[in-house]
Length: 76
Image (cartoon, rainbow, N blue to C red; front, side, top):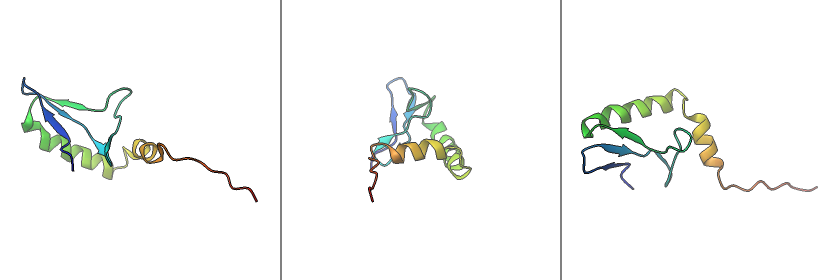
């Protein structure tokens, strides 16, 4: 399992939320959340967990789950 965050040299942290092995796009062209430091990480992860429970990420997760699947029409 990959760690979802990277600590930069300046102390900031970039948190990438993943669905499987792929990062999800949280906003157009953005797939990471920038934090001031590691001390914010727990609170942000708890907030992301709550957002998932509240259904706020359902559309994003569904589009990620469908990405790359082929639609095959069955002929009768």
